[in-house]
Length: 81
Image (cartoon, rainbow, N blue to C red):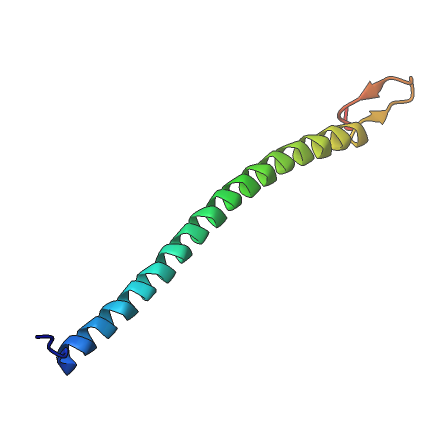
């Protein structure tokens, strides 16, 4: 003899189905977040490398601009000498 599920059993099954769907979405979101964090880590590393290289170029150019020629034609780093 087959018995019909009670309304409480049907409600429980429906809620477990909703929970399962929510956990699936949560899992996909966590996976996507992990992927984005890995990409962010690579981008931040690239930015730090760029900043270091750009700073080195700036310092090289600035040191070249800070030298003045004295009357004898010699270059000095400090114009007050």
